[in-house]
Structure formats: C-alpha cells, structure tokens
Amino acid sequence: DKIHCSFILGGVEYMRKSGYIGKLAYKLFSSLNMRPSLKVSDDRFGVDRIWAGNLKKNYMSYLHHALPRTADPDLNVLFVTYAVLSEDDLVWIGEEIRKIAAFKHIIFQKASAAISLNCGPGTFGLLYMDKGRRAWHMDPILQAGDISRDADEEMGEETDNELVTDDSLSAATDSEEPLWYETIDGIDGKTAVKNSGSESSFKTVLQIFYDSVDSKASEIEGYYVAEDWNNYKIKVHALKSSAKLIGAMELSDAAQLLETAGKKGDIDYIREHHASLMRDYKKMGGRLAGIYGEGIQEAPENKAKPLADEFLLESVYEGLKEAADSMDCDAIDEILSELSDYEVPVSDRNKLYEIRKKAEAFDYEGILNLLESH
Image 1 (cartoon, rainbow, N blue to C red):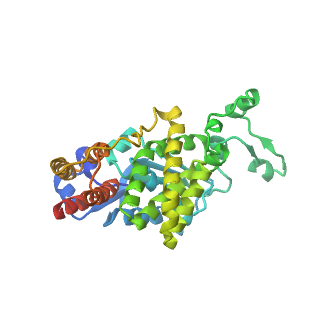
Image 2 (image 1 turned 90 degrees about the vertical axis):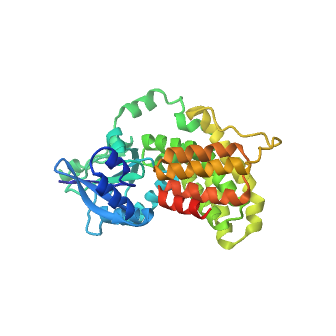
Image 3 (image 1 turned 120 degrees about the vertical axis):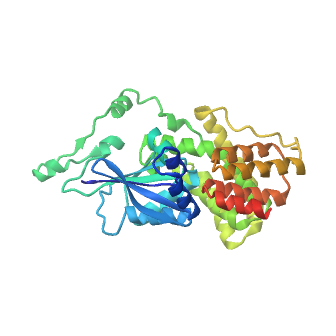
C-alpha cells in the first residue's frame, strides 16, 4: 500500500493484438486518438484513466496525475519504466518529473518483455514509494557510499556507518584499475553517474545516447541545411541535455551556446560553430563504438551521394503510407534509414523530417495527412 505503479500507453495497437481489447474498442480508441493509463493495485492491472488528444500533452497530464500535489513520495528514488522511447523523450520526461518533485535518483529502466509486448511502443510508467516514518534506505541498492542509519539515530546512537558492498570491496582491492567509464575520453564519469542516478542507469543512458548519434546528427544537420532555426534550436537543446546526462560536459556546453544563439537569432554564430559541434558529436559516437559496436560509418567528404530521383522518392512515399496505415513504426524507420545513402532534394527533405518527427511520436494519422497533402 506504500508503492505506486502505473503506466500510460502510447497506443492500443498491441493491446488489440494481445487480445485485451476487441476490434470495436480498438477502432473507437484509434479514431478518437485515445490511450489508457493502467494502474497496478492489489496485484492486478486495471484501467486508471483514458486520455485523448496530443500524445505529448497526454504524457504531461499523466505525469501530473501519477504525481499529484497531494502525493507525499519518498524523494530518494523514482523509477521510469519504458518501452521504445526516444532519447529526447526520456530527457524531457526526466526534466518534467524534476519540475514536479525533487527526486534524488530518477532511474530509467527498459520495461520487461511482457509489458513491452502487451502495451507496445511509447509506453512508460512511474514507480515510487510513499514517504514512511523511516527512510527506505534505497541508497545501498543504487550506489556505494557513506550513509547514516536512521535506526541508530532514533536510538540516540549517532554513528556513521560505512556501507560495504561488492563494488566498494572491488574498488579497494583494485584501486589502481580505473573504472570502465573513467577511460572514455570527453566524459566525466563521476558526473555522469551522479546525473543518471546510478552506474547501471548510466549504462542504459549511455547506450541510448550512442544508438541515437547517427540519427540525431542527421536531424540537426537537416534542420541546419533547411535553415529551420526553430527546430534546430530544439534539437541542440536536446543534445545539450543528453550530453550533460552522460557527463560529456564540453559537448553539452557547445550545444548550449548554439541553443542560446538560436534563441537570440544569432545565425552568424550558428553558421560559424555548427560544423565543429557536429564533428565533436560524431567523434563522441566514435569513442563509444569501442564499448557498444563498430561505430558510425561516415562517408568520405569527397564522395558525393547519389541523388534520390523522382521514381525512388515515389516508392518511398508509397512505402511510408503503407507502413503508417499498418502503424508499423519499425518499417517507417527502416525506409527513412535507407534514404541516408542518397542526397534528397530540400523540399522532400523537409517533409521527410516532419514524417520522422511524427513517427517518433507514433502519430500515424499525422503522417497520413502529410502524405495526403503531398
């Protein structure tokens, strides 16, 4: 009765596939752009509320519903469990939670296979505990360090107790061996672990950061080429936040300066420093390649990409329409990724960026409307 556990779904397609709702209910939910939030109580899942309208606004409403003003949470830790959310979404969710409540640790954790398959992409939930008469002492689980035990203080024994864990014993015996995150050039490991909440959470955040370098760099580059300074400013803001989260402070500061220039309308500064930001961003991806993969393959600067002709683009739009009709976000992502090998005309490039943004928000109706106007 002290634990709060709830989720908001990105859509109801997967609940229909799993048999939790029928075809009629699915059509009703989809046509009215509705999505439920689920709550776990007495060991059972149930529908808590039904939200309608814009996905981002629904997310915001859910956050305030799950963490109401009347709540009295233990501010030591909150878990955000999610299924298929972008790096930008995770950063935004973390920022909004901190506006509501000053949690010491916000732990981002991928949802289990069961929740992911039943609830689908775009789902996330908040899990936290009510404040008790005594602290729950979650710190020993989250990180090693020095703590004071409330029980001792209540008994009048004001003693400092050093927490002994496998990690601290390993650090004591292998003190000359640097920790894995201390060897990454350009990343302040201690700051990263502190910002992420724990070492395990930092691993997850760093993986997400690495996986998105290629796509996010392409988005920023696209908005720069299209001179869409409003969206450019939004994307460098997201880069600033995510870079700060993983302890890449120099990269975060560089993005901050470009964001500030965007707010002031200082386009000359953006043009002068954009290339260096992109170079440093991709270099960071290359450094992380040793941990997570083979790295980001960049085409040589002197090798021109083939132009995407009218026939190719027409087949792309047909494929996107078919994928949006089927609500298949993986197919949309695959189609857009294949276009990265081609030079796309600016007019089509802008439309494809809009489609990518709507796909990240699972706004399939918005994609179909864009394609219809095309």
